Image: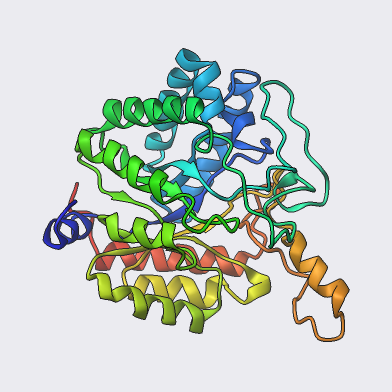
Length: 357
């Protein structure tokens, strides 16, 4: 594990890190992006939208990979992955790469992912009616890759191959090894998975730091935070919530990044949160760029459930988009937001110059 001194040395050598979680608007899922089918079309869409991200001052994007595509279309996936990295680099965007993911559905809801044309449901966050955001709070989520021994071993082979190939590549900013470990009521179930993935990555000793987000204080993400070189977290709360989380995470004495934020219905908005992250020099990646097939501008379905239970006291403003910054025509959802982002990014580059250049 990196020392605190090494972590800060690395972090302070970078410009202020800011960007978004990226999926091109013509894809409903990560599988649709990475598979061979229609990749050329999705790459062209990505190039337009990556240019848009750079135009407002973003310098990085966060992306979750899809094991099933690596597993079934290995050589093609590796070639497509390299082409995507190059396309992002042409716009001055580094990549934060995510491997494992506990944001999952219960096993009785799970349907194996298949290559080919992808189904999506209109009007649902994430493009799926049965999703991790559908309000299943009692059931335990099923991690279809890591909970099965044979696929888990192939998954860790993927981790070793990709980190090993790009361990010295400056286009990769950071390895975010595990998205929301312990989510879906998995609690301590993913503790051995978290420990294993950090061990695999440490054995490679990449130039980039390792992280995994602290999300809700369960045993799996507590361990992830303790093993991380850079402390990352997810927070969709308002300004007061963000300040409270930042204050608590200072105990680690390490640089911090909020790798998922922006939830207008929770009053997690650009006007308050983005300046806060800049002033505290906390890296940040909002969820979503251009509204599209994944429909993450829609509220989580569990929020509709809360409204239906008690419409008189439900305080959500359903007239607002939840995530995403741009409309399908590439105009801003709210130009005041994107203009503020652009001004803050300009100020950031004057305040925290890029020492890598």
